[in-house]
Amino acid sequence: MTKQLPRLALIVAAAAVLFPFLALFSAALQPQSTLSPGLSWPSDPQWGNFATAWTTAGFGSLLKSSAVIALGVVPIALVLATLAGYGLATMRLKAKGPLFALLMLGLALPYEAIVIPLYYDLDSVGLLNTYWAVILPLVGLFMPFGVFWMRTHFESLPKELMEAAAVDGANSWRTLTRVLLPTAVPALTTLGLLYFMWAWNQFLLALVLIQDPAMRTAPSGLGKFVQQYGKNIPLLSAGTLIVIAPIVLIYLFFQRHFIKGILQGAVK
Amino acid sequence: MADTLVRTERSVAGTRRGAAAPRRRGRFVPLLYVAPALVFYGLFVIAPWLHSFWISFWNWNGIGAATWAGLSNYTAVFEEPALRAALTHAFGFIVFYTVVPVILGLILAALTSAVPWRAMPVIRTIIFLPQILPLVAVGVVWKWIYGEDGPLNQVLRAIGLGSLARAWLGDFTYAFPAVGLIGTWVSTGLCFLLLLSGIGKIEPSLYEAARLDGCGRLREFWHITVPGLRKEIGVACNVTVISALAGFDVVYVMTGGGPGYSTMVPGVQVYQLVFTAGRVGTACALATVLSLITCAAMYGLNRLSRER
Image (cartoon, rainbow over all chains, first blue to last red; front, side, top):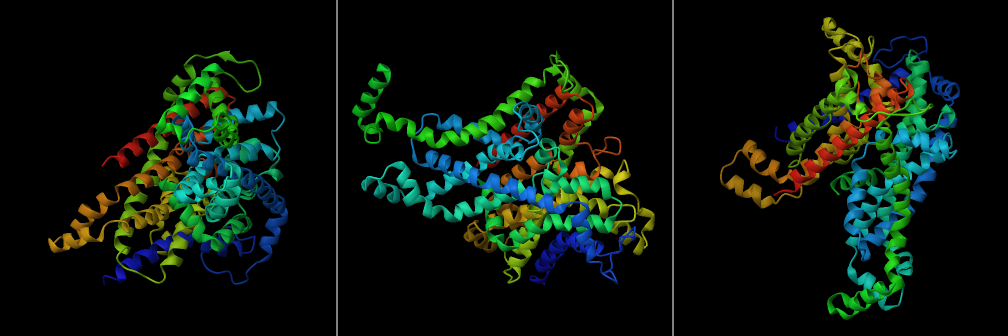
Protein backbone atom coordinates (compact mmCIF):
# COMPACT_ATOMS: atom_id res chain seq x y z
CA MET A 1 0.00 0.00 0.00
CA THR A 2 2.70 2.49 0.95
CA LYS A 3 4.47 1.69 -2.29
CA GLN A 4 1.43 1.42 -4.51
CA LEU A 5 -0.11 4.83 -3.84
CA PRO A 6 2.94 6.92 -4.81
CA ARG A 7 3.52 4.85 -7.92
CA LEU A 8 -0.10 5.17 -8.92
CA ALA A 9 0.11 8.96 -8.45
CA LEU A 10 3.16 9.13 -10.70
CA ILE A 11 1.51 7.00 -13.38
CA VAL A 12 -1.58 9.20 -13.32
CA ALA A 13 0.60 12.32 -13.65
CA ALA A 14 2.56 10.85 -16.55
CA ALA A 15 -0.62 9.69 -18.27
CA ALA A 16 -2.11 13.17 -17.93
CA VAL A 17 0.91 14.53 -19.75
CA LEU A 18 0.94 11.90 -22.47
CA PHE A 19 -2.79 11.56 -23.14
CA PRO A 20 -3.21 14.72 -25.25
CA PHE A 21 -0.40 13.63 -27.51
CA LEU A 22 -1.60 10.08 -27.98
CA ALA A 23 -5.04 11.49 -28.81
CA LEU A 24 -3.40 13.92 -31.22
CA PHE A 25 -1.46 11.13 -32.87
CA SER A 26 -4.60 9.07 -33.47
CA ALA A 27 -6.38 12.18 -34.79
CA ALA A 28 -3.54 12.81 -37.22
CA LEU A 29 -4.09 9.40 -38.80
CA GLN A 30 -7.83 9.77 -39.42
CA PRO A 31 -9.15 10.35 -42.94
CA GLN A 32 -9.24 14.08 -43.65
CA SER A 33 -12.99 13.96 -44.15
CA THR A 34 -13.44 13.10 -40.45
CA LEU A 35 -14.86 16.21 -38.83
CA SER A 36 -14.58 15.02 -35.25
CA PRO A 37 -12.00 12.30 -34.85
CA GLY A 38 -12.83 9.87 -32.08
CA LEU A 39 -10.43 8.73 -29.45
CA SER A 40 -10.05 5.31 -31.02
CA TRP A 41 -7.18 4.16 -33.19
CA PRO A 42 -8.17 4.66 -36.86
CA SER A 43 -9.05 1.48 -38.71
CA ASP A 44 -7.21 2.67 -41.80
CA PRO A 45 -4.33 4.93 -40.64
CA GLN A 46 -3.69 7.71 -43.14
CA TRP A 47 0.06 8.18 -42.91
CA GLY A 48 -0.21 10.37 -46.00
CA ASN A 49 -1.63 13.17 -43.81
CA PHE A 50 1.88 13.95 -42.68
CA ALA A 51 3.06 14.36 -46.26
CA THR A 52 0.03 16.53 -47.09
CA ALA A 53 0.62 18.74 -44.06
CA TRP A 54 4.30 18.98 -44.94
CA THR A 55 3.60 20.21 -48.48
CA THR A 56 0.44 22.32 -48.05
CA ALA A 57 1.73 24.27 -45.07
CA GLY A 58 5.32 24.42 -46.27
CA PHE A 59 6.63 22.93 -43.07
CA GLY A 60 9.89 22.16 -44.84
CA SER A 61 10.73 25.85 -45.13
CA LEU A 62 9.38 26.54 -41.63
CA LEU A 63 11.64 23.95 -40.05
CA LYS A 64 14.51 25.42 -42.04
CA SER A 65 13.77 28.92 -40.72
CA SER A 66 13.58 27.66 -37.17
CA ALA A 67 16.92 25.91 -37.69
CA VAL A 68 18.56 28.99 -39.25
CA ILE A 69 17.40 31.17 -36.36
CA ALA A 70 18.38 28.67 -33.67
CA LEU A 71 21.76 27.93 -35.24
CA GLY A 72 22.39 31.66 -35.60
CA VAL A 73 21.52 32.42 -31.99
CA VAL A 74 23.30 29.55 -30.23
CA PRO A 75 26.97 30.14 -31.18
CA ILE A 76 26.86 33.92 -30.76
CA ALA A 77 25.03 33.70 -27.44
CA LEU A 78 27.34 30.95 -26.14
CA VAL A 79 30.50 32.92 -26.93
CA LEU A 80 29.23 36.16 -25.41
CA ALA A 81 27.84 34.48 -22.29
CA THR A 82 31.10 32.57 -21.75
CA LEU A 83 33.26 35.68 -22.05
CA ALA A 84 31.04 37.72 -19.73
CA GLY A 85 30.60 34.89 -17.22
CA TYR A 86 34.38 34.40 -17.13
CA GLY A 87 35.02 38.12 -16.68
CA LEU A 88 32.51 38.47 -13.89
CA ALA A 89 33.55 35.30 -12.08
CA THR A 90 37.30 35.78 -12.07
CA MET A 91 38.09 39.48 -12.32
CA ARG A 92 37.72 42.57 -10.23
CA LEU A 93 35.29 45.00 -11.69
CA LYS A 94 34.09 48.14 -9.98
CA ALA A 95 30.58 48.16 -11.40
CA LYS A 96 29.87 44.50 -10.65
CA GLY A 97 26.90 45.22 -8.38
CA PRO A 98 24.98 47.51 -10.72
CA LEU A 99 25.82 45.24 -13.68
CA PHE A 100 24.24 42.30 -11.91
CA ALA A 101 21.17 44.30 -11.01
CA LEU A 102 20.83 45.32 -14.65
CA LEU A 103 21.12 41.72 -15.83
CA MET A 104 18.69 40.48 -13.16
CA LEU A 105 16.14 42.86 -14.61
CA GLY A 106 16.40 41.00 -17.89
CA LEU A 107 15.25 37.78 -16.27
CA ALA A 108 11.95 39.40 -15.34
CA LEU A 109 11.24 41.58 -18.39
CA PRO A 110 8.42 40.09 -20.44
CA TYR A 111 9.09 39.83 -24.19
CA GLU A 112 5.88 41.79 -24.79
CA ALA A 113 7.53 44.83 -23.27
CA ILE A 114 10.25 45.09 -25.91
CA VAL A 115 8.81 43.53 -29.05
CA ILE A 116 6.81 46.63 -30.10
CA PRO A 117 9.71 49.12 -30.06
CA LEU A 118 11.90 46.45 -31.67
CA TYR A 119 9.41 46.30 -34.53
CA TYR A 120 9.81 50.03 -35.24
CA ASP A 121 13.53 50.22 -34.43
CA LEU A 122 14.51 47.25 -36.60
CA ASP A 123 12.32 48.64 -39.38
CA SER A 124 14.20 51.93 -39.29
CA VAL A 125 17.55 50.17 -39.73
CA GLY A 126 16.21 47.87 -42.45
CA LEU A 127 16.50 44.62 -40.48
CA LEU A 128 12.77 43.91 -40.13
CA ASN A 129 11.70 40.77 -42.03
CA THR A 130 15.19 39.27 -41.97
CA TYR A 131 16.39 36.39 -39.81
CA TRP A 132 18.58 38.91 -37.99
CA ALA A 133 15.43 40.61 -36.68
CA VAL A 134 14.88 37.58 -34.45
CA ILE A 135 18.48 36.41 -33.97
CA LEU A 136 19.93 39.66 -32.60
CA PRO A 137 17.21 40.37 -29.99
CA LEU A 138 17.22 36.73 -28.87
CA VAL A 139 20.96 36.89 -28.23
CA GLY A 140 20.33 39.96 -26.08
CA LEU A 141 17.41 38.36 -24.27
CA PHE A 142 19.40 35.19 -23.61
CA MET A 143 22.32 37.07 -22.03
CA PRO A 144 21.09 37.32 -18.41
CA PHE A 145 20.51 33.58 -18.05
CA GLY A 146 23.69 32.63 -19.91
CA VAL A 147 25.95 35.02 -18.04
CA PHE A 148 24.65 33.76 -14.69
CA TRP A 149 25.00 30.18 -15.84
CA MET A 150 28.60 30.52 -17.01
CA ARG A 151 29.63 32.69 -14.07
CA THR A 152 28.38 29.99 -11.70
CA HIS A 153 30.41 27.41 -13.60
CA PHE A 154 33.63 29.43 -13.50
CA GLU A 155 33.14 30.25 -9.82
CA SER A 156 32.72 26.56 -9.01
CA LEU A 157 36.19 25.74 -10.35
CA PRO A 158 39.03 25.30 -7.83
CA LYS A 159 41.11 28.47 -7.37
CA GLU A 160 44.34 26.47 -7.86
CA LEU A 161 43.52 25.98 -11.54
CA MET A 162 43.73 29.70 -12.25
CA GLU A 163 46.64 30.28 -9.89
CA ALA A 164 48.66 27.59 -11.64
CA ALA A 165 47.93 29.22 -14.99
CA ALA A 166 49.00 32.59 -13.61
CA VAL A 167 52.25 31.12 -12.29
CA ASP A 168 52.97 29.77 -15.75
CA GLY A 169 52.60 33.32 -17.01
CA ALA A 170 49.38 32.78 -18.93
CA ASN A 171 47.35 35.93 -19.53
CA SER A 172 43.60 35.94 -18.99
CA TRP A 173 42.81 34.94 -22.58
CA ARG A 174 45.16 31.95 -22.55
CA THR A 175 43.87 30.95 -19.14
CA LEU A 176 40.34 30.93 -20.50
CA THR A 177 40.95 29.14 -23.78
CA ARG A 178 43.62 26.63 -22.68
CA VAL A 179 42.80 25.90 -19.06
CA LEU A 180 39.18 26.76 -18.26
CA LEU A 181 37.24 26.07 -21.46
CA PRO A 182 37.94 22.32 -21.45
CA THR A 183 36.29 22.16 -18.02
CA ALA A 184 33.26 24.05 -19.32
CA VAL A 185 32.11 21.55 -21.94
CA PRO A 186 29.22 20.08 -19.91
CA ALA A 187 28.01 23.53 -18.80
CA LEU A 188 28.23 24.78 -22.38
CA THR A 189 26.39 21.76 -23.75
CA THR A 190 23.47 22.28 -21.40
CA LEU A 191 23.34 26.01 -22.04
CA GLY A 192 23.56 25.45 -25.79
CA LEU A 193 20.67 22.99 -25.70
CA LEU A 194 18.49 25.35 -23.68
CA TYR A 195 19.31 28.23 -26.03
CA PHE A 196 18.51 26.04 -29.01
CA MET A 197 15.15 25.04 -27.56
CA TRP A 198 14.15 28.58 -26.63
CA ALA A 199 15.13 29.90 -30.06
CA TRP A 200 13.45 27.03 -31.91
CA ASN A 201 10.22 27.48 -29.93
CA GLN A 202 10.17 31.25 -30.26
CA PHE A 203 6.74 32.51 -31.24
CA LEU A 204 6.08 36.15 -30.38
CA LEU A 205 9.29 37.66 -31.78
CA ALA A 206 9.04 35.63 -34.98
CA LEU A 207 5.37 36.55 -35.39
CA VAL A 208 5.93 40.28 -35.02
CA LEU A 209 9.39 40.82 -36.48
CA ILE A 210 9.15 38.61 -39.57
CA GLN A 211 6.13 39.21 -41.78
CA ASP A 212 6.92 36.57 -44.43
CA PRO A 213 5.21 33.44 -43.04
CA ALA A 214 7.73 31.14 -44.73
CA MET A 215 10.63 32.74 -42.84
CA ARG A 216 9.07 32.43 -39.41
CA THR A 217 9.91 29.79 -36.85
CA ALA A 218 8.03 26.51 -36.99
CA PRO A 219 5.79 27.43 -34.02
CA SER A 220 4.73 30.72 -35.64
CA GLY A 221 4.09 28.86 -38.87
CA LEU A 222 1.87 26.54 -36.90
CA GLY A 223 -0.01 29.55 -35.56
CA LYS A 224 -0.73 30.60 -39.14
CA PHE A 225 -1.66 27.05 -40.10
CA VAL A 226 -4.29 26.96 -37.34
CA GLN A 227 -6.04 29.96 -38.86
CA GLN A 228 -6.11 28.37 -42.32
CA TYR A 229 -6.77 24.70 -41.53
CA GLY A 230 -8.36 24.95 -38.09
CA LYS A 231 -11.34 22.87 -39.19
CA ASN A 232 -9.29 20.08 -40.75
CA ILE A 233 -8.35 18.34 -37.50
CA PRO A 234 -6.37 15.42 -39.01
CA LEU A 235 -4.21 17.76 -41.08
CA LEU A 236 -3.79 20.19 -38.19
CA SER A 237 -2.78 17.34 -35.86
CA ALA A 238 -0.24 16.07 -38.37
CA GLY A 239 1.20 19.58 -38.72
CA THR A 240 1.45 19.98 -34.95
CA LEU A 241 3.30 16.68 -34.63
CA ILE A 242 5.72 17.73 -37.39
CA VAL A 243 6.48 20.97 -35.53
CA ILE A 244 7.13 19.31 -32.17
CA ALA A 245 8.96 16.24 -33.50
CA PRO A 246 12.45 17.77 -33.84
CA ILE A 247 12.47 19.33 -30.37
CA VAL A 248 11.04 16.19 -28.76
CA LEU A 249 13.69 14.02 -30.45
CA ILE A 250 16.49 16.30 -29.25
CA TYR A 251 14.95 16.28 -25.78
CA LEU A 252 14.75 12.50 -25.62
CA PHE A 253 18.36 12.27 -26.71
CA PHE A 254 19.70 14.88 -24.25
CA GLN A 255 16.98 14.72 -21.60
CA ARG A 256 19.41 14.73 -18.69
CA HIS A 257 20.97 17.99 -19.89
CA PHE A 258 17.56 19.60 -20.39
CA ILE A 259 16.14 18.63 -17.03
CA LYS A 260 19.30 19.48 -15.13
CA GLY A 261 19.62 22.75 -16.97
CA ILE A 262 16.08 23.98 -16.41
CA LEU A 263 15.98 22.89 -12.77
CA GLN A 264 19.41 24.34 -11.92
CA GLY A 265 18.82 27.40 -14.02
CA ALA A 266 15.63 28.09 -12.15
CA VAL A 267 17.35 27.82 -8.79
CA LYS A 268 20.03 30.36 -9.70
CA MET B 1 44.85 61.20 -16.27
CA ALA B 2 46.93 62.30 -13.31
CA ASP B 3 44.11 61.22 -11.11
CA THR B 4 44.22 57.64 -12.41
CA LEU B 5 47.96 57.54 -11.87
CA VAL B 6 47.63 58.63 -8.27
CA ARG B 7 44.93 56.06 -7.66
CA THR B 8 47.02 53.29 -9.17
CA GLU B 9 49.96 54.20 -6.97
CA ARG B 10 47.79 54.29 -3.94
CA SER B 11 46.35 50.85 -4.55
CA VAL B 12 49.81 49.46 -5.14
CA ALA B 13 50.94 51.01 -1.90
CA GLY B 14 47.99 49.68 0.06
CA THR B 15 49.06 46.18 1.05
CA ARG B 16 45.59 44.64 1.11
CA ARG B 17 44.61 45.55 -2.43
CA GLY B 18 48.16 45.89 -3.66
CA ALA B 19 48.80 42.22 -4.31
CA ALA B 20 45.91 41.88 -6.73
CA ALA B 21 46.07 45.36 -8.23
CA PRO B 22 46.40 44.91 -11.96
CA ARG B 23 48.63 47.01 -14.13
CA ARG B 24 46.86 50.03 -15.56
CA ARG B 25 46.16 48.30 -18.84
CA GLY B 26 44.71 45.37 -16.92
CA ARG B 27 41.92 47.47 -15.50
CA PHE B 28 40.07 47.46 -18.75
CA VAL B 29 40.49 43.77 -19.40
CA PRO B 30 37.43 42.65 -17.38
CA LEU B 31 35.33 45.18 -19.26
CA LEU B 32 36.53 43.79 -22.57
CA TYR B 33 35.17 40.38 -21.61
CA VAL B 34 31.85 41.66 -20.33
CA ALA B 35 31.26 44.35 -22.96
CA PRO B 36 30.09 42.24 -25.94
CA ALA B 37 27.33 40.63 -23.86
CA LEU B 38 26.35 44.01 -22.46
CA VAL B 39 26.26 45.60 -25.90
CA PHE B 40 23.76 43.01 -27.19
CA TYR B 41 21.75 43.19 -24.00
CA GLY B 42 21.77 46.97 -24.01
CA LEU B 43 20.94 47.37 -27.70
CA PHE B 44 18.24 44.73 -27.98
CA VAL B 45 16.70 44.61 -24.51
CA ILE B 46 17.34 47.72 -22.42
CA ALA B 47 17.18 50.27 -25.27
CA PRO B 48 13.88 48.94 -26.67
CA TRP B 49 12.45 48.82 -23.17
CA LEU B 50 13.34 52.48 -22.60
CA HIS B 51 11.99 53.29 -26.05
CA SER B 52 8.73 51.56 -25.16
CA PHE B 53 8.57 53.60 -21.97
CA TRP B 54 9.04 56.75 -24.05
CA ILE B 55 6.37 55.78 -26.60
CA SER B 56 3.92 55.17 -23.75
CA PHE B 57 3.60 58.94 -23.27
CA TRP B 58 2.44 59.56 -26.83
CA ASN B 59 -0.69 59.06 -28.88
CA TRP B 60 0.67 57.30 -31.93
CA ASN B 61 -0.84 54.99 -34.54
CA GLY B 62 2.55 53.69 -35.67
CA ILE B 63 2.63 55.59 -38.96
CA GLY B 64 1.55 59.21 -38.61
CA ALA B 65 2.74 61.96 -36.35
CA ALA B 66 2.62 61.38 -32.62
CA THR B 67 1.00 63.78 -30.20
CA TRP B 68 1.90 64.12 -26.55
CA ALA B 69 -0.45 62.08 -24.39
CA GLY B 70 0.92 62.65 -20.93
CA LEU B 71 -0.36 59.96 -18.63
CA SER B 72 -3.59 59.31 -20.54
CA ASN B 73 -2.34 55.96 -21.89
CA TYR B 74 -1.77 54.83 -18.32
CA THR B 75 -5.23 55.99 -17.28
CA ALA B 76 -6.61 53.92 -20.15
CA VAL B 77 -4.74 50.83 -18.92
CA PHE B 78 -6.51 51.01 -15.58
CA GLU B 79 -9.87 52.35 -16.72
CA GLU B 80 -10.73 50.69 -20.03
CA PRO B 81 -12.52 47.43 -19.20
CA ALA B 82 -10.67 45.35 -21.82
CA LEU B 83 -7.24 46.51 -20.67
CA ARG B 84 -8.05 46.19 -17.01
CA ALA B 85 -9.46 42.72 -17.62
CA ALA B 86 -6.16 41.72 -19.26
CA LEU B 87 -4.23 42.70 -16.13
CA THR B 88 -6.75 41.03 -13.82
CA HIS B 89 -6.53 37.82 -15.86
CA ALA B 90 -2.74 37.88 -15.65
CA PHE B 91 -3.10 37.77 -11.88
CA GLY B 92 -5.86 35.15 -12.14
CA PHE B 93 -3.54 32.91 -14.12
CA ILE B 94 -1.21 32.80 -11.11
CA VAL B 95 -3.74 30.46 -9.49
CA PHE B 96 -3.50 28.03 -12.41
CA TYR B 97 0.19 28.48 -13.26
CA THR B 98 1.59 28.73 -9.73
CA VAL B 99 -0.69 27.92 -6.82
CA VAL B 100 -2.21 24.66 -8.07
CA PRO B 101 1.02 23.29 -9.64
CA VAL B 102 3.05 24.04 -6.51
CA ILE B 103 0.48 22.32 -4.31
CA LEU B 104 0.17 19.34 -6.65
CA GLY B 105 3.95 19.17 -7.04
CA LEU B 106 4.41 19.32 -3.28
CA ILE B 107 1.99 16.46 -2.65
CA LEU B 108 3.45 14.36 -5.46
CA ALA B 109 7.02 15.01 -4.31
CA ALA B 110 6.24 14.22 -0.67
CA LEU B 111 4.47 11.02 -1.68
CA THR B 112 7.20 9.72 -3.96
CA SER B 113 10.42 10.92 -2.34
CA ALA B 114 10.63 7.99 0.07
CA VAL B 115 9.74 5.35 -2.52
CA PRO B 116 12.57 4.55 -4.92
CA TRP B 117 11.41 3.16 -8.22
CA ARG B 118 13.34 1.92 -11.20
CA ALA B 119 10.82 3.44 -13.61
CA MET B 120 11.49 6.91 -12.19
CA PRO B 121 13.82 8.13 -14.99
CA VAL B 122 11.18 7.33 -17.60
CA ILE B 123 8.41 8.97 -15.56
CA ARG B 124 10.65 11.98 -14.98
CA THR B 125 11.27 12.39 -18.69
CA ILE B 126 7.55 12.20 -19.46
CA ILE B 127 6.42 14.50 -16.67
CA PHE B 128 8.94 17.14 -17.72
CA LEU B 129 7.91 17.00 -21.40
CA PRO B 130 5.55 20.05 -21.42
CA GLN B 131 8.49 22.27 -20.46
CA ILE B 132 10.24 21.73 -23.77
CA LEU B 133 7.27 21.88 -26.12
CA PRO B 134 6.49 25.02 -28.08
CA LEU B 135 3.50 26.56 -26.27
CA VAL B 136 1.76 27.14 -29.60
CA ALA B 137 1.63 23.40 -30.15
CA VAL B 138 0.30 22.95 -26.62
CA GLY B 139 -2.40 25.52 -27.41
CA VAL B 140 -3.36 23.80 -30.66
CA VAL B 141 -3.71 20.44 -28.92
CA TRP B 142 -5.87 21.78 -26.11
CA LYS B 143 -7.99 23.88 -28.42
CA TRP B 144 -8.93 20.67 -30.18
CA ILE B 145 -9.47 18.80 -26.91
CA TYR B 146 -11.86 21.52 -25.69
CA GLY B 147 -13.67 21.72 -29.03
CA GLU B 148 -17.40 21.15 -29.39
CA ASP B 149 -16.86 17.63 -30.77
CA GLY B 150 -13.47 17.25 -29.14
CA PRO B 151 -12.20 14.43 -26.93
CA LEU B 152 -13.30 16.07 -23.67
CA ASN B 153 -16.93 16.29 -24.72
CA GLN B 154 -16.74 12.82 -26.26
CA VAL B 155 -15.64 11.43 -22.91
CA LEU B 156 -18.37 13.35 -21.08
CA ARG B 157 -21.02 12.01 -23.45
CA ALA B 158 -19.64 8.49 -23.21
CA ILE B 159 -19.92 8.43 -19.43
CA GLY B 160 -23.42 9.86 -19.46
CA LEU B 161 -22.52 13.43 -18.54
CA GLY B 162 -23.42 14.74 -22.00
CA SER B 163 -25.43 17.55 -20.42
CA LEU B 164 -22.14 19.08 -19.23
CA ALA B 165 -20.65 19.05 -22.73
CA ARG B 166 -20.24 22.46 -24.31
CA ALA B 167 -17.92 24.51 -26.51
CA TRP B 168 -15.63 25.24 -23.61
CA LEU B 169 -13.58 27.97 -25.23
CA GLY B 170 -16.65 29.79 -26.56
CA ASP B 171 -18.28 29.94 -23.14
CA PHE B 172 -17.99 33.19 -21.19
CA THR B 173 -17.92 31.37 -17.85
CA TYR B 174 -15.68 28.42 -18.67
CA ALA B 175 -13.24 29.79 -21.23
CA PHE B 176 -10.95 31.39 -18.63
CA PRO B 177 -10.53 28.37 -16.34
CA ALA B 178 -10.24 26.11 -19.41
CA VAL B 179 -7.33 28.17 -20.75
CA GLY B 180 -5.86 28.50 -17.26
CA LEU B 181 -5.82 24.74 -16.69
CA ILE B 182 -3.28 24.43 -19.50
CA GLY B 183 -0.89 26.37 -17.29
CA THR B 184 -1.39 23.72 -14.63
CA TRP B 185 -0.71 21.01 -17.20
CA VAL B 186 2.51 22.73 -18.27
CA SER B 187 3.90 23.74 -14.85
CA THR B 188 3.11 20.83 -12.55
CA GLY B 189 5.95 18.61 -13.77
CA LEU B 190 8.52 21.36 -13.33
CA CYS B 191 7.29 22.11 -9.78
CA PHE B 192 7.29 18.42 -8.90
CA LEU B 193 10.86 17.81 -10.03
CA LEU B 194 12.14 21.01 -8.42
CA LEU B 195 10.54 20.12 -5.09
CA LEU B 196 11.63 16.50 -5.35
CA SER B 197 15.26 17.52 -5.70
CA GLY B 198 14.74 19.90 -2.77
CA ILE B 199 13.42 17.13 -0.54
CA GLY B 200 16.59 15.18 -1.26
CA LYS B 201 18.58 17.98 0.38
CA ILE B 202 16.63 17.99 3.67
CA GLU B 203 18.59 16.48 6.56
CA PRO B 204 17.38 12.88 7.06
CA SER B 205 18.07 13.26 10.80
CA LEU B 206 15.17 15.74 10.99
CA TYR B 207 12.79 13.02 9.85
CA GLU B 208 14.32 10.48 12.23
CA ALA B 209 13.92 12.87 15.14
CA ALA B 210 10.32 13.53 14.18
CA ARG B 211 9.60 9.80 14.00
CA LEU B 212 11.12 9.31 17.44
CA ASP B 213 8.82 12.05 18.71
CA GLY B 214 5.93 10.08 17.29
CA CYS B 215 5.04 12.46 14.48
CA GLY B 216 2.61 11.17 11.89
CA ARG B 217 3.24 11.45 8.14
CA LEU B 218 1.00 14.47 7.89
CA ARG B 219 2.70 16.44 10.67
CA GLU B 220 6.09 15.46 9.26
CA PHE B 221 5.02 16.91 5.91
CA TRP B 222 3.74 20.09 7.50
CA HIS B 223 6.57 20.73 9.97
CA ILE B 224 9.65 19.41 8.17
CA THR B 225 9.07 18.98 4.44
CA VAL B 226 7.24 22.25 3.73
CA PRO B 227 9.59 24.51 5.75
CA GLY B 228 12.61 22.63 4.40
CA LEU B 229 11.46 23.39 0.86
CA ARG B 230 11.03 27.10 1.43
CA LYS B 231 13.73 28.02 -1.06
CA GLU B 232 12.55 25.59 -3.75
CA ILE B 233 8.93 26.69 -3.33
CA GLY B 234 10.13 30.27 -3.78
CA VAL B 235 11.94 29.32 -6.97
CA ALA B 236 8.95 27.42 -8.33
CA CYS B 237 6.71 30.41 -7.63
CA ASN B 238 9.18 32.75 -9.25
CA VAL B 239 9.44 30.85 -12.52
CA THR B 240 5.73 30.09 -12.83
CA VAL B 241 4.53 33.57 -11.85
CA ILE B 242 6.64 35.05 -14.62
CA SER B 243 5.13 32.67 -17.16
CA ALA B 244 1.62 33.38 -15.84
CA LEU B 245 2.04 37.14 -16.18
CA ALA B 246 3.81 37.10 -19.53
CA GLY B 247 1.74 34.43 -21.28
CA PHE B 248 1.04 35.03 -24.93
CA ASP B 249 1.33 31.95 -27.15
CA VAL B 250 -1.42 29.79 -25.64
CA VAL B 251 -4.10 32.49 -25.52
CA TYR B 252 -3.18 33.88 -28.94
CA VAL B 253 -3.66 30.48 -30.57
CA MET B 254 -6.65 29.25 -28.57
CA THR B 255 -9.02 32.18 -28.13
CA GLY B 256 -7.31 35.41 -29.18
CA GLY B 257 -8.58 36.75 -25.87
CA GLY B 258 -12.25 35.93 -26.48
CA PRO B 259 -15.10 35.36 -26.19
CA GLY B 260 -15.50 39.07 -25.56
CA TYR B 261 -12.35 39.65 -23.58
CA SER B 262 -12.99 36.89 -21.07
CA THR B 263 -9.57 35.28 -21.67
CA MET B 264 -7.67 38.45 -22.64
CA VAL B 265 -4.12 38.67 -21.28
CA PRO B 266 -1.68 41.58 -21.48
CA GLY B 267 0.50 39.94 -24.14
CA VAL B 268 -2.36 39.43 -26.59
CA GLN B 269 -3.81 42.84 -25.74
CA VAL B 270 -0.49 44.54 -26.53
CA TYR B 271 -0.37 42.73 -29.88
CA GLN B 272 -3.94 43.69 -30.77
CA LEU B 273 -3.53 47.31 -29.69
CA VAL B 274 -0.61 47.69 -32.08
CA PHE B 275 -1.61 45.59 -35.06
CA THR B 276 -5.42 45.83 -34.98
CA ALA B 277 -6.30 49.03 -33.15
CA GLY B 278 -3.28 51.15 -34.08
CA ARG B 279 -2.81 52.39 -30.51
CA VAL B 280 0.92 51.97 -30.10
CA GLY B 281 1.21 54.36 -27.15
CA THR B 282 -1.45 52.55 -25.15
CA ALA B 283 0.17 49.18 -25.98
CA CYS B 284 3.49 50.44 -24.66
CA ALA B 285 1.85 51.76 -21.48
CA LEU B 286 0.30 48.34 -20.88
CA ALA B 287 3.65 46.66 -21.57
CA THR B 288 5.35 49.03 -19.13
CA VAL B 289 2.81 48.32 -16.40
CA LEU B 290 3.17 44.59 -17.04
CA SER B 291 6.95 44.68 -16.77
CA LEU B 292 6.79 46.71 -13.56
CA ILE B 293 4.36 44.19 -12.06
CA THR B 294 6.59 41.29 -13.12
CA CYS B 295 9.72 42.89 -11.67
CA ALA B 296 7.90 43.70 -8.42
CA ALA B 297 6.55 40.16 -8.13
CA MET B 298 9.98 38.68 -8.73
CA TYR B 299 11.61 41.00 -6.22
CA GLY B 300 8.97 40.21 -3.60
CA LEU B 301 9.22 36.47 -4.10
CA ASN B 302 13.00 36.56 -3.86
CA ARG B 303 12.82 38.44 -0.58
CA LEU B 304 10.26 36.01 0.81
CA SER B 305 12.13 32.85 -0.08
CA ARG B 306 15.54 34.09 1.08
CA GLU B 307 14.52 35.22 4.56
CA ARG B 308 15.13 32.57 7.14
